[in-house]
Length: 110
Image 1 (cartoon, rainbow, N blue to C red):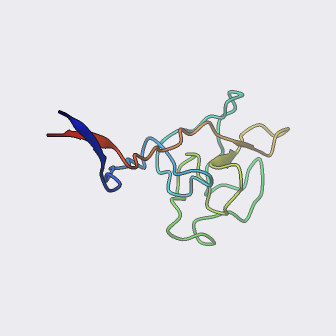
Image 2: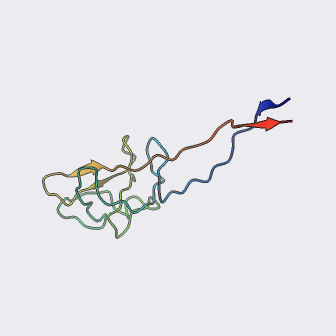
Image 3: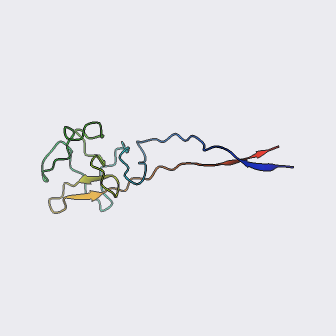
């Protein structure tokens, strides 16, 4: 006779370089630097073509720096995003994968 028994929530290692925890993805630290429309992201440390206040100095420890990777330092509700290098499009969300979790797995008990 084999019975199935629920266990406590399993611990899962999340790699913040490949995914962001939904819904805000503020923990994402990957290197995605283009938006779903194909626009290239603007560096967080530059003010051209779009001037902005979402800078490493204003949002310390939020993954901003001299790079153009998607981030969500200011808590946008749709997740990771970036300013674009397209002067006609200020910013866009990025297509960052959502990190998954495993809860209450069942294993056979004999």
